[in-house]
Image (cartoon, one colour):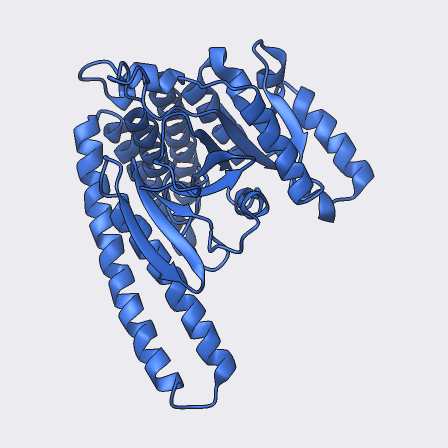
Length: 381
């Protein structure tokens, strides 16, 4: 695999994970860093439904931004998102390599937090709890919180919200009050802000071994043996208890009335599905890394097949449009095709663990896909 400047990808390159809830500005931040209009989630719902990466050269450094799905992703369960992020991290960490490295370690984690829109939510709390468990308290300084969407926010309200976010013990406060502390930047000036954040992470010249990586490096370790796994288990057990209370309340209402409540019966059925989902998530914490890889491979094969079907449909549409004067529709279909090609290549590249490359020319954008664990690295030219 060739990095943007023609050098092999190296453990010495800059690797930054980009995390945050769905819609927190992760994709926009990546676009501002790369300064390229690459397809990273705005048009393809599933594009950020799995870990993916984008490589570019910045100030002479090969930088790789690892884009991750949010734990509140509407297309995936918390369990599957956690499994994929954790598996990626644990595979990237390879201690005591012959070259003296520990594999491909992160230089930091950018955690995007929208400054505009809804205030702190239950999903925000869950995401932060899992992030803290993945990092470990000794690695809070790995996290750079980037507040986003300042361009659409009321400045006065945003400043108040920012202060509350960074200091409240019920919000982001814990990672800013316990040493080593996290860092905060505003993403409020487009590329200039993004460059400032990149400079900070690159110039401190530090690599992090996260707690989850150390824990899963032990022989026969499973996710249930880790702090992140235990934190997730607590969350899902709390979910089961809360849903069970709702079922009990609904049954009590039905029992004390002579009327029929078909809507309550339907709600109870949905609640049971929620409990089943949480119980499945708890069971999956016992999966080994090998089991996680097998699950991911099966899902990957299904996704590639679905993309093949969609590509075939898209190309047939292009052939039909070429016979007409519908130029706008033809351009739209070609853009759709290019995005599908990039996504398919990323999925195939993600099947491997060793570094290799796939080259594809898509709508003038050079795309090089490196086989980083479970991810395709799109090389932004």
